[in-house]
Structure formats: structure tokens, C-alpha cells
Length: 225
Ligand code: DX5
Ligand code: ZN
View (tube, rainbow, N blue to C red):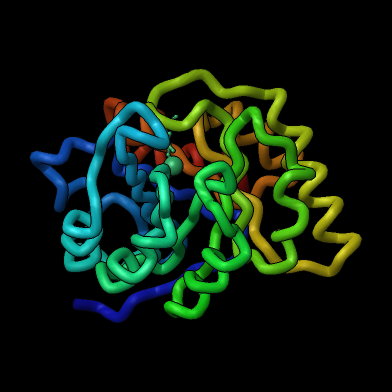
């Protein structure tokens, strides 16, 4: 396989394979450009969220099919137990939910110790304040712009206050995390999120649900450029 690549300069679009046709998985993974896009992998356990998706086995399959940066979003309880398996499967970044962590600092430290970049996600009902103690130890803050669990939901514009507050916090404290948004991202909502300070744009339905996913991805890149 080609050497793994890690584009880290925003803006970055991250197609979410949650909305891909898994009977044509290789085609879905051929869509993102490894030189500039990430591949977003939504792991759901039917406990933290009502939906159930996939685990390290599928992430390992994705790893074989693309050298792209694998952005693994864990919507699972006790995520600390799954850091090593997802890292071994090939995750480049592992994002855990603040609401799912008994000890977020220890979990983030374990992710970094594994060699992956460490991400922390907050649900719509969780204020940025709740994550503040951990922002200095983060590579990526994921602000959910829908209730996690399903693709194709409507963007919650009132989450953008958290994005701009995170950006202001980062400037004040000289921190280096990227700000990612996930849920309901399409051309217009991505533009709004970009204006608020978002840098990584996860998009499932608006890319893989489009009549022409390559064209849709191109438009989305252009809308945040
Ligand atoms: C939602 C997931 C998202 C999902 C976004 O729980 O975390 O990554 O794929 O899907 P869209 O872009 O369709 O809202
Ligand atoms: Zn996600």
C-alpha cells in the first residue's frame, strides 16, 4: 500500500463512510483524496447511541484500501478499552466523547501514548465549559452539530457559538487543536461553520448520498476554501 499521509492544514473535508454503500466499500474509499481529505469512521455501540455500526475489523479493511488519514469517531461507552484495538487497526486519530469517559484526561493520554492523535467530542447538550479542562491536551475538538447516532439529520446552527468560543479559547491559551464539526454539513452549513472557526468538516449524506459524490466533494471543498 502507498505510504500513509496526514494532511493537517485546514480546511479539511472528511467524508463519513457511515453514509457509504458498504457493498461497494472500496469505491467509497477511493473517493477522498488522501493528500487533502480525511476519512471519517463512525463507530456506534447501541449503548452510547441507539445505532450500531462497526468496529476495528472494518477500520482495518479501510486501512488496507486507502493511505488516507483515518479519523475514528467513537460513539461508544468505555472508549478507553478500545483505544489499542482501533490504533492497531490503523486509526490516525481517535476521538472519544466527553460524556462517555470516566476519566477523560487518562483516556486522551492513552490515545496519544498509542501514537494516534487525540480527539474529544461534545454532544449538542454539552457546553464547551465542560471540556475546557482538557482542551490543552487535545489534537482535535469535535463539536457535534447533530445529536450523534444517525446520518442525514439537520444541522444545528446554534452549536456554532461553541465553535467560535473554542477558537477564542485556543487563541487565548496558545493551544493547537483543530476544530471539527460533524452532522448536517453541506455547502451552506459548512460555510457557516467555517465562518465561525471550524476547520475540519465531516460530511456523510451530502457526499455519499449525492447523485455524483465526486462533484459533491469538490463543491464542499470549494465552499470552505
Ligand atoms: C452522526 C455521525 C456523523 C454522520 C454525519 O452521529 O457522527 O459523522 O456521519 O452524517 P451527515 O453528514 O449525514 O449528517
Ligand atoms: Zn462522526
